[in-house]
Structures are given as structure tokens and as C-alpha cells.
Amino acid sequence: MPASPFTCVGFPPSIDANCTHIILGSMPGAASLRAQQYYAYPQNRFWRLMAYLLEGGEPPQDYAARLQMLLRHHIALWDSIASCEREGSLDSAIRAAKPNDFTALLAHYPRLSTFCLNGGKSADTFRRANKPLLKRDDLTFHALPSTSAANARWRFDDLAKVWKKALPLEE
Image (tube, rainbow, N blue to C red; front, side):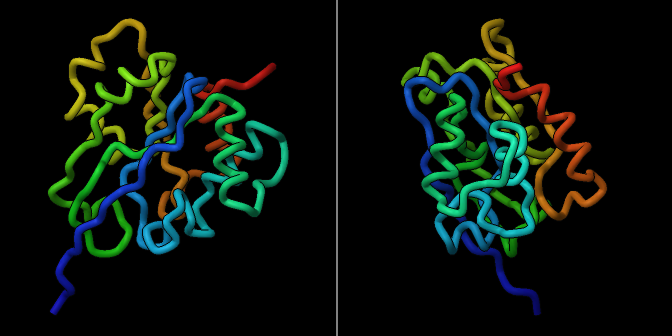
């Protein structure tokens, strides 16, 4: 008999008043929820990709330093989903998703202008719950391939090429 889904509750955003971009996952996976850290599963390529694109190196080992790396580049981090029911870590197992409130977030952080949606579930959830925001001319949205290890058909170099176009990178 399969285990019943459990309620997952996401984290608060990592953000400051200087952020212009926000990266949105769907809901942290089981390893991340246990560690209380975004993208804690070692095989997820998120932190490696961010360090490579933003600073040309390897990600810091310390979680707080990883978050600071994003903030240095004016990038916030959050999820499209505030809470849901899910067994395991796969986005396909998410049920009863409750979205985060991005209208309220934008009221507090008006410099945010670019939304980077990490994976299909994040993009789908965001689009369904935020139709008025999608019509705003002052906001840009990028539906990006997931950095998850489950998205194995996307090699690291291919992810880097696509993600590079959405991030605030210095030339």
C-alpha cells in the first residue's frame, strides 16, 4: 500500500530591497525540506549553475554564503507554491498546491521585474495563480528548464546557455 502524501510547507523568500530578479522553484524536495535549505539535494544542479554563471566558479559550501551570492547579483529566491501535498520529491506528485502571493511580494519589493521560473511545475503554478501579473508590461517572465537531477535530458552546458539569457549577468 503506498504511503499517503504529506503536507509540505515552503520557505520564506531570500530577498532584499535591491533584488531585480527572482528565481522561483516549485516546492522544495524532501532533502531540502529536511535541511531547511533551498536546493539541498546534492544532485540538483541549481547552486553549481548559479555559481558558474554569476561568478565563474564553484558554489560556496556554506548555505548562507550561497544565498548571499544570489543577493550580491540582485537575485531573490522563492517558490511558486507556498504549500502542497506530496509524497517524495517529484513535482509530478504535487497535489493541492497553494500558490505564494506575488502581488504582495511586489508591493514590498517594487524593484523586482524579472521572474525566472525553474521548471514546468513552477511555471504552470505561477501562470495559473498570477494572470494579472502576466499582463503587466513592466514585468518579464522566463520559463526555464528545471535544474533538478530528474531533468537529465538537459546537460549542464545546455542549462547554462538557456539560463544565462534570463539572469542579470555582467558582460
